[in-house]
Image 1 (spheres, rainbow, N blue to C red):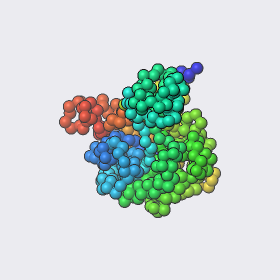
Image 2 (image 1 turned 90 degrees about the vertical axis):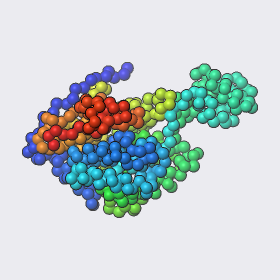
Image 3 (image 1 turned 180 degrees about the vertical axis):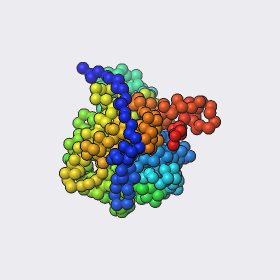
Image 4 (image 1 turned 90 degrees about the horizontal axis):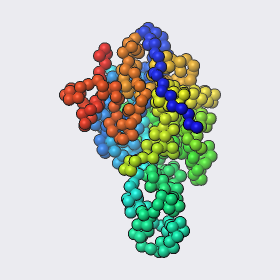
Length: 490
């Protein structure tokens, strides 16, 4: 029996006076490596707003997005997942070639100017493998499904049609298109059926593909090149993306069964991440280098917090300057997409663990991932390292943040969705104006836009303007504002 869904109210909030905020831990400095001190322990994690150009370049909309967050003067602002390959990836920022550096330099300068130099700005760099949209059956059977001798043999057996072993390819395709669902399931293997129902997706275990087999050879240099470009663009640091559904997290996963020394065992799964860290550090010296990784994959057979804590200690020993802990967000349990759309890793149970809403299980969305950061930090400290650990996930009040810091569960407290709702909330709290905070409702309106690769906004922004107002920049349909409303008191 499934657990009943609960609708949780927002946590009550007693906002501090300016004097109380000044005495708290959240608004004190924290060192992040040899060269960077953040003025406060407030942190905005990476969020992808889908505002880059189609070839991955910084646009005016990108600059406006980050200026608005920087105006709220967080201690650290992390720029969205930015691709390290020079390959088409839609309106997602890229850093896979030197031509992207001038645009990124404009972005770094914009953040410094908007924050008055108060905010340290990092870029999150990411690698991901190919994923295709779910095809229509006509397209899949008509073009995409490889008609191999093995497929012919399976079809001949399952359909009792021995002639399919030698029939023209067009006839095999036509017969499969006309097959019943039961017949299709009897013919296709698991990966072929997945490609039909969910869209084809590469895995790090697909070592029959040369470019996947060679990832341990190519990725350290790609990450190092990306980090050097981030440094050359004038940012304060780089965050390596080792989390969620993407390449580096997949190497760390217990589902990584590679037998070439880069999978299967704990040490094998950790090997490439450590080689990436070493290559990046060798290239950029004492430039701030941190990473984001999963405290729990939250999928069947996946990595759990005990191993994640050991990963954290190993990363600290390798010399990273901070560890940011997340949870879930995997393809393995994602909901099947509609035809013409790609699978989205935040739609299944692990996706809910990553971005829980007010409509969910009895635990609710507020601070539920803090124990993961606490376990990682405990392991890091037990190993003799002082590497700062960043906690995130449904933290939206001063009291929550202070409790996390006071308990020693983390050294920095991050907030994504609450900061999206109100980019000024850190400053409002710090200056004793907490009652004016625009509070996130944790319904994941923003996540729904992200899922469709639409420009991300907040429904609370969209209530704060009159459509047609020429002073407000909006989405192409004119219904959603692209930048949060200004702080009337700031």
